[in-house]
Image (tube, rainbow, N blue to C red):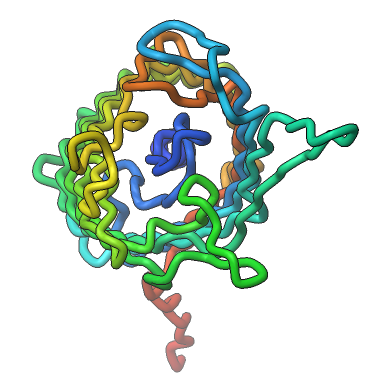
Length: 334
């Protein structure tokens, strides 16, 4: 049961990862370095997942707005792969990377003479990679309690913004931040096996450095609480309540009012409900689906917000420890 719940939480945490564009603010999978607690020594975890998100509603503050909005809608299709390895029983290392098949925004049509002009912009490619280390500060398997701390960094595969036909794409459809970032996290887990219930909490902070064009994405603070319940053998339901806070972005080229570096239409606070169902095939391969439901939104300035976002994942743990050889049965001479 421990393995299944761990994998369920892994998937849910993927849904909590941070975005760097106003069109993909909920659950944008820029990376996947947030697993749950530590793995057993010499255990390898593999996770592959797909996420889709669609946005078509503008918010200003905590209210919808249709006044002078440029975009008709935006959406993306993303897939990621992550690995975790238990170096010791308390220390785990994690790496990940992902790929945007498309990150698209379509502008509202413009009328030129008798013609209607449709404008669409699409980026694609690898997003930032990630490396994390986690240490189990307090682990009591007999009481099903774990308290883990971690830290890591994200790195860009390229520091150059994407161009198509020699034209640089807008920042909101770039597949990568093109910049480095550092993060830290705290994780707590408590289980009650007699009733098949577990409680998880996750707190994570991420700081982004400026890119080569002197643009810096805002800091991100994530707080999540998870409740899991065993329905039948190998089948679990999980509900996540997640709060996401993002500070303003900064453009140090001073292009905003009075030469300010603060990008007005950036930063937000979101409260998200994320239900999930997960099934463990023969207790080995785990398949999960989840759906993000924004409960409360507050956006600085005017920003496009998600209508829906869902993800599907598959995961598996491999035991790479050396097996003890079976003792040979010797026949004693008579």
